[in-house]
Length: 375
Image (cartoon, rainbow, N blue to C red; front, side, top):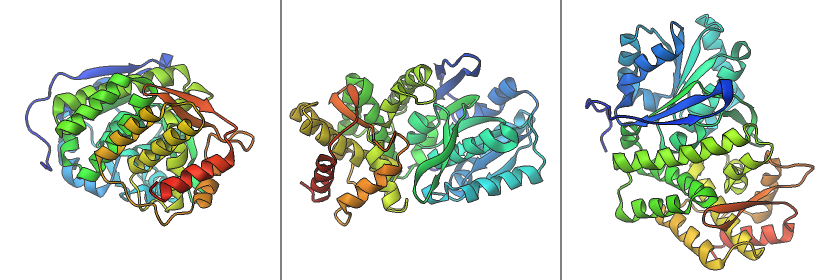
C-alpha cells in the first residue's frame, strides 16, 4: 500500500452535519483533504494556538504534510505523540498531555487537533473536554473505524483496568475532516477492523448499507476512494441522526452499542492486547445475533447471513482459551448497566435492533460458551 500522502488535488468533499444547535458541526469527507486542513481551521478557529496530538506511526507518515498545511495558514502548532495502541488509552497518558499543554502555556482560546485513530481521538477529546475546563478540538481521523464512528458524536474517554471507557465526557468536536487517502497506509488488519464496525451501522439502521458492504468485500474493493466516501458518509449520516436524537445516551443512542457490550468486555478480558476494537465488536455482533435467535427475536437465516458477512471480512483472533463466566463477569462493568442489569442491543432484522433487559444469565453464558467452542 502507498504509505505517503498523495500530492494530487483534493476531490470535492461531501459534508454531513451533526445538528446539535449551537454545538452543531460538520464532518467533511473526501480525498486529498489533508492539504486543506490549515485553511479550514483558519476559517473556523481564527487566530488560536494549536496542539496536535498524534502517535509516532501516524506522524511519521503524515506529520509533515499536516504541518505544512498548518504553517501555510500561519499556525505554529506544538505536538505531543502518545503511545500507539489501546493500552495507552489511560489517565496516565491524559496527565502527560495535560502537563505538555501547561508547559507550553496553552490557554482557553487554544485548540487541539486529534490526528490519528480511535485511541488518539478518544484521549485527545477527553483532554480537550477537561483541560482548563474545556477547550476546542478538531478530529482528523486516520483509520476507517475512527472515521465512521469514534471521531463523531462527542464520546471521549479513557480506560481503567476494570473496563473500557469508564472515565470520560460527552464533548463535541468543532469539526471532523476525513481524508480517505490516508486510509491507504493502514495495515490490512486495521482496515478490516473498520469494516466490522461499518457492518454495525447496516444491522442497526440500513439493510442497503449492509448489502453495499457485502459487495465491497466480495469484489475486494476496500480502498476504492469513491466507495469509501460513500461508506463513510452513510455511516456518519446514521450516527449523526442518532446523536441528534439522544446526545448523551439516555436511551435511543444505545443502539450504537450493538456488539459493544460483549466486545468491550472481550477487550478488557484480554488486557487490550489481543483484539483490534472492531474485531472485538465483530464477536459481539455474532453473539448478539445468536442470542436474538435464542430469544425468538430474529430469524435464524438472517442471523446466519449477518455472521457470514462478518466472518467474510477476515479471520478473527482466537477465543478458544477464554472462559464464558469470566467474559460475562467482565460485562458487568459495561456503562449500560442500570441497577445491576445489563441492556442488550439485539438485532431483529438486518436494519433494525431492539434494546432488551432481563435476558436470562444462563442463556447468555450458554451462548458465549458455544461461540468460544466454535459451535
